[in-house]
Each structure stands twice: as structure tokens, then as C-alpha cells.
Image (cartoon, rainbow, N blue to C red; front, side, top):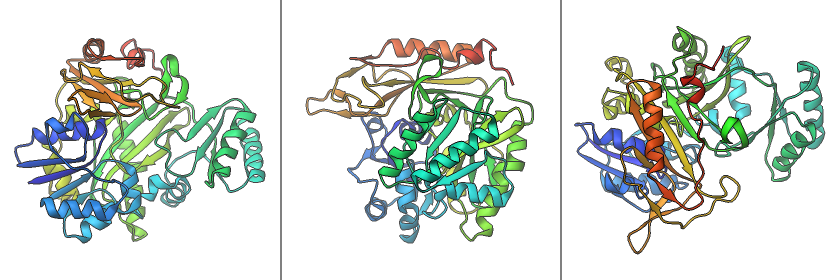
Length: 422
């Protein structure tokens, strides 16, 4: 099988690592890729926002399967263009990808499917924003307020704050930029990320993970695209995956099929385990980053065959998934100034170490690896248990050198210490 991966982040590097270990993969390409994927796969310059360019590359390279990593090309229609070219694609259509592209659309689908989620108020103007915040306060008895950009925002379009003025300012900023806003009730409890591979009918869940959205230790600082993750979750309630399958994943896939907009690809459910039960925080339409970096190393089932089965509607015939024992932890090394104004162009050393997945990197003219984005590396380790994986991951982080680099020191610490209480 010739497999083309679309994207340039650590998620795509993790996909390439997993695909490289699959004996069914005879050729691998990653476009545009980064300094890490270049060691594993052919690289091609590519504008991932251009569906026709993606389909053209898949055709000329002779891909048997295209795996679309980021959300932007999916919402733009990349999967549609690839399938129109007669090539199997792991990723939903543009219409189905609205589960991530529009939070309001996702809420409509969840309501129709009976999926438990936070109550929400769509906002189209400043007056509606103030009214929605007042209704949230009346419903919950006060703060915190949750204000979301309705469209794609690279994981950074959500503000959770006790400050009504800050909530107003965030919402108005989105509205002034021509966007729409969703105000939601706050969901308490720990968050869980659960991926599911689906062909639009059959759904196969992967292992749950937890990511860390805030930039700083103790969940301080601004929201980011994710500063680290771990899997599996030693504290997760027994039967959690079965419950989410029955109440969230399968009903959502069934509702999309009922609408004539079948969702095939990776359905990512961001969940809150609240005092009132499981609630959906959000859906994504692709592998999450950085959770992919800890889920895929634990998957023993060959990845290419699994994704091809989902892309070709044959997932029901796929064997049950097999998992390696142990745990995985990844720690994101971010550039100075991330997420507001990340500095780029700095040399990175130690980036060729074990478990180091590249994200925002590029090879300079002099052959050195340089930072080229906000999240520069995802440093990953697998261990016999969570404590061992965490220790090794941080030992590997210590071997990386990047001027002004920032990383959290508490990824998976609460779980190791047994401080997560449901």
C-alpha cells in the first residue's frame, strides 16, 4: 500500500511512525511534512488549504490511501476531492467535518441524536452575547462563563473565565472579526479525549487519553493547541468506553448517516465527566494533537489496514483492535512566546532523540533543524506504567535544547499521584 499523509505537525509524525512499522506499507509520503517526517517519508511542498492540490498530489504520486491529519483541509473539502479522484481517503467529507467546523452544527446533531452535552446559546451579535451571558449566570448561579468561537480556531478559540467583562471582550472580538459565538454552561469534572475510527456505520473506539490545554503548570495561562497528554487513564470509571460508545459515538454516527452526511474517518469526542454524568465538550473530525502521540504507540494493530478499512467501508470485517500493555506520555516543547507570538528560526538540538516527534520544525539551508511554529516538539515515551512513562518522557525533554523553550512540568502528575477524583 502507498500511503500519503497530509499535514506537518507532531500528529502527522506520529502517524508516519505508526505507518512505517506496518509491513503493508510499501511507500510513505508526508506533505508538506516537517524535519522529523522527512526521515521516514517522501516530502512534497503542498498548500493543505487547497483540496485540488492535495488530490492532484495523491494522483500523481500514486497513493492507495490518503490520511488527512489537520482539520483545515477536511473542512475545505480535501476528502471529497481525493475520493472524486478515485482514491481511498481516511477523513470525513466537508459537510461531515462541520462537526468540528461549526460548534452550532455539532450542537444540532447532538440534540437530534440525544447526545448529552452542555446547554448552549448561539450568538450572532453583541446584544445576544450579553443576553446569553445573563442566561448562563441565571442557570448556573454565576460564573464561570464559557465563550467559544463557533468556527475553527486551532484549539485556542475557547475562553473559560469567572470574569464577565473578559467573556464579553472575547465574544465581541470574535464577532468583530466576522465570526459567530457560542456561549455554553460550564461543565465540571475531569476531561477525557476518546477517539473512534468509523466508516460511517461501524465504530471502533481507541483507548481514552487526557490532554492539557492550558500553557502553564496547574492549568494556568492561556488556552493552547495542547501542551501534553497521556494514555490510558488509570482513574477512568469501569465501562466508560462502552458508555460513550452507546450514548455519544454510535448515536452521532447514526444521526449523520440519517442526514445523508455519513461521517467516515476519525471522530474525536472531547468529554467532561461531570457530577451529572458524561457530557460532550466538543467534537473534532480528525486525530487530536497531542493525544495521537500517546494513543498510537499503544496500538498493536497495524494502522494502515485499520484506516483503509474505514476509508473503504469495510470496518465491520476488521479484526478487533489489539493494544500493547503499559502507558504513554507526551510533553510538548513550545517556542518562546507561544501561543500569542511564538518565536521561530531558533536552532533545535536533541530533536533526533528517541521518542521525539517533530511539530513546528524545518531544515534550514545549512542543514540544521530550526523552530518553525509554536509547538515545536512532542517528546514521547512508553513505559510499563504511567509513572515510568512520565519519568522517561521528562528525561528525554531534558536532552532537547531550544532557546527560550517552554514546557509544562506537570503532565500526568495528578494521575500518577492519584489526585484525580471523580
